[in-house]
Image (cartoon, rainbow over all chains, first blue to last red; front, top):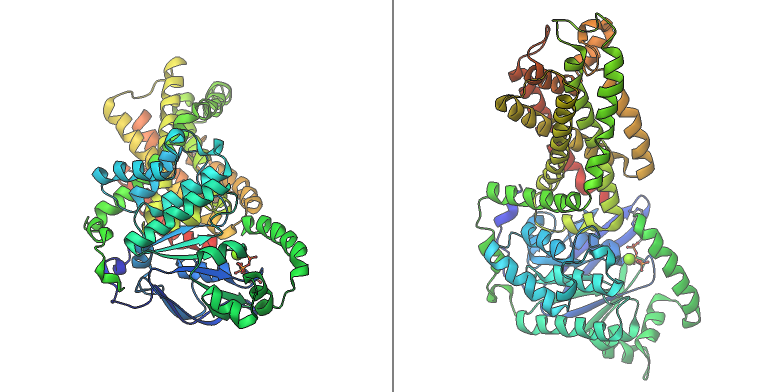
Amino acid sequence: MSSDTDARPAPVKAAIETTHLSRQFGKLTAVDSLDLSVPPGTLFGLLGPNGAGKSTLIKMLITLLPPTSGTATVAGCDIRRQAVAVRRRIGYVPQLLSADGALTGRENLELFAKLYGIPRRERAQRIDQVLTVMKLEEVAHTLVQRYSGGMIRRLEIGQSLLHEPRVLFLDEPTVGLDPLARQAVWERLHALRDTHGITLFMTTHDMEEADKLCEAVAIMNRGRVVAMGAPDELKARVRSGASLGDVFAHFSGESLEQEGDYRGIRGTRRTASRLG
Amino acid sequence: MAYEERAEPQAAWAEASPIVAFWRQTMAVAAAELHKLRRDPWELLTRAVQPALWLLIFGEVFARVHGITAGGISYLSFLAPGVLAQSTLFIAIFYGIIVIWERDLGILQKLLVTPAARSALVLGKGLSASVRGLAQALIVYVLAAVIRVPLHFGIASIIGVFVFVSLGAVLFSTFSLTIACLLKTRERFMGIGQVLTMPLFFASNAIYPLALMPKWLRAVAAVNPLTYLVDALRTLMVGKVPGAFSLGVDFGVLTLLTIAMVMLASRLYPKVVS
Ligand SMILES: Nc1ncnc2c1ncn2[C@@H]1O[C@H](COP(=O)(O)OP(=O)(O)OP(=O)(O)O)[C@@H](O)[C@H]1O
Ligand SMILES: [Mg+2]
């Protein structure tokens, strides 16, 4: 057990703050001396082409991957020195569907509620609440391997909220959701932000969604943030009438004609990322 | 909006003493594994086949070879604890595949992002191996009763056997998790799993006494943890055979190794995902 469990975070202005954060894989610099600051309560979108370093950045912020150099604070706690304190304050919804299929939805939630140390009397109540909000009451006692992709996604998002995290990391959270479920998920996330001031940090390849939902976006390319600001601000910077897709293309040096290819690559990468 | 404005529920939860929190996390992981086991009782039944074959076929045949045991006990009595230790080993040694499987599915990543102690995640898996081991113990006792192998069926010796089987299962399953964390892929792990079990098994006192071994093999057996598990189970199930260690030595060796293995596995656990 680490001694940093009880560390109190210093009162801070930023939910996420990185300083010269870098990660190397051999000769490759996946994240390159990144300085990024996300104010609390922001709906923040991280955009960027494949291999830009988005996942690597998230893995460092959620303490799964140690940085090669530099550091960051999340919810006021240092990711290197106060890793356990960071973990207490964050939620994580990974890119690939990853609830345990051999357990029921409720059992999945119970496992995580216990690991977060939610006391017994509160546990059942919170789990019920999550099942209701995510519209999973009817399948609560069904094995997750029988769930549809969208149901698993909802379960995972619900699970990441059990302990009321301050900062929620989401990797393409609405991929595979039908429009209604997508709407429901976003309403829930918005509500959390409004009532609890939770910060949302998400990656997405869906420019329309990012434009609609994020208050601030950063575009990442080759390990660096190449542009950051409110979507409208960035669009105005490129040219009047530009879409966020144009902004993306402008800053990441990819043309929109490549969109088809780009989606294809993404599919293969997703399979590859299952293995690593 | 600064952070300290909002009351922090987690702060209250963290009040539980670290040891209590550790134990709860461990039991949470073990409970999840047991839910899976409960849904798949077939697994436990198919696990009965191997010990049955060893006792009914191998045991019955070798019982006719005179001079294989010392101290005047029947070969089947001598063999029963060996078979139990062996099936505990075989169940536990493939546990590592679970960590690779959960890594590939992204489940491990989510577990590692919780504040749970890594050692609790590891020990929880180990304890679920213990439950499987205890099922094996029951099976061996039932088989022994059916074919009338004389064993000690007293309550104290049965409890002792359960304790040692649990300990052995945690030891070998966390050993397996450690190997899996080092090898990282399913293919490599399955290969090594096969390569490891047989030497552990044959270089032990599971099916023949140490006294029959050539000197070099005896030296290997003396550093083989399986030997100490067999030794303890044999003392508890049939009584002290010549050359046996004391139960205290068996317990000490197995406990120390188990603690070391849990610590090692929890150090390596987070490395599987990076
Ligand atoms: N474990 C690893 N070992 C070696 N190289 C890695 C590892 N993880 C990532 N990389 C490399 O680091 C770079 C950044 O990868 P990362 O997964 O962070 O990109 P990404 O922005 O998430 O891309 P995508 O949109 O495709 O998910 C890539 O070139 C990738 O190949
Ligand atoms: Mg990625």
